[in-house]
Length: 312
Image (cartoon, rainbow, N blue to C red; front, side, top):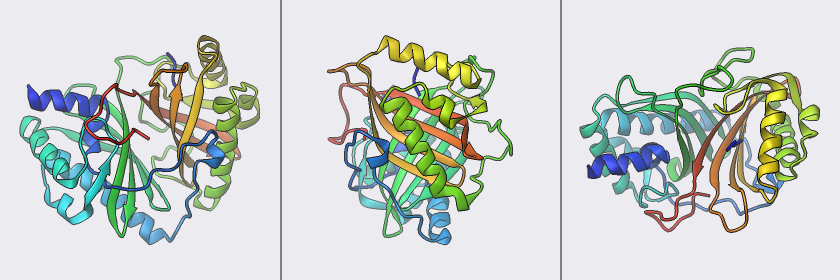
């Protein structure tokens, strides 16, 4: 949820726009543009072994390419015809390999710190803290990968610089709500939690109905958006001011990914007609039928792109 050198230049575009992680995807069919999360495409859960494999591959590619400069993982796990939605990189596995080599040469101590990973159907979402130079705050990044025949076939991402301070005292990565685990829990409730978040998101952000907070949010609500205070009152005030500032706001959900108590919504937020808007991933945690925690990453949609795909 919002509130208001050649290699380095390419990297800044990559990291600032999550491109540093984004060069690892392949061609695929993007979910259709929809006006409601509930119509943003649903994917089956599949077997646990396949989902675990997809998550392991996504992490191995990200860390292998950007921490180790190991381009062999691209040959093994990424389709040659892969489609890229990160505006800072062109399509194709070779582009990813070249980018990984350049990043590792210029930033040999770069770290791709994976915080949490979820998978549903053919999609994997990875939430990471990317630090190119030790001691710097780095970037918060969400990567979404689509798999086809066991390989990465498509990629979307969003990236945001980590601020020095936050309005809520939480960082952009930790789990604060109980139980304090980064891994998805309560897998048997995946479908229930997904439907709950879809309804809550549609009512609150698509329809701009603040009363959704009273219905779907828990009284103990932990916020990781650095600009919004903690708790239910904080999100009410923050979104109330946002809706007032942008009365013509349009939120277009594109895809939803859920596993256990974690549900992610990838959306296009358009503050006013004619604006490019922002690509945003909202990640919600659900407990006992209520939303209890939230992380997000917000990135402006640029005027130009290195590929002919949109960010969505």
